[in-house]
Length: 252
Image 1 (cartoon, rainbow, N blue to C red):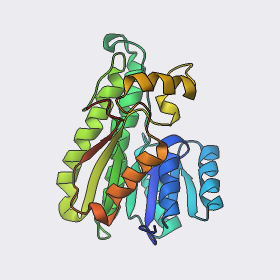
Image 2: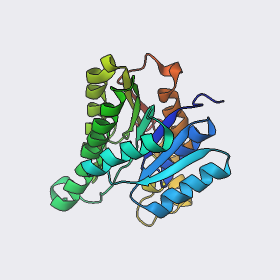
Image 3: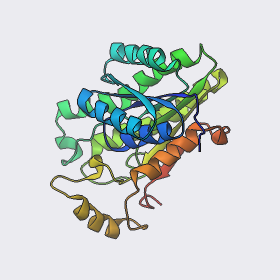
Image 4: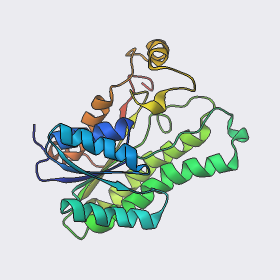
């Protein structure tokens, strides 16, 4: 399929995990992908994988907690690819392991700053460009932990992702009349480093999830990417303010 021929796509948190899978999936369908993140080396690996598969991509370093860097990121994305048709705000941070009242203030601030304020800042600059250039599509990566599901000892992350789900819906209503369509995906445990518990191997995770999830397995990163591409595609034209849960039935 070549649903995204000629489209320009920005993916934050594209240096590994779901972000890398999303970048590869868009490039495989004809998009020019700008892979963004904080670590140049991992972004360069993503770009090399895209190019090895015959796609086109560029790497731009940016910290989503810094508004100035995000403004520069959008400018660089437009300069590299000729526009900004689609943005996927995937960058995120997980810190857990203690009850809510025992979270260190610095950890709380870091998680909320990255996961909530980072998404808002990214949309702020993406929307500013899109509304002056005919519109666009934004997909935010939230999580099933938050609005849909809770576990113990992850309160900062759960709070941040519930906020992303709510922010997505609010922003979708605010900007649809500017031809900017905004949605979210909420993955559960998936084949990405963030779903591994401390000291846990992928094999350990597979055994744990087989007992925990109704489907009995994690989602493949490519399966989550496929959902993102659907929401960004013309086939999802009437889908506005949705939050698509992809968690193997954990929150059913």
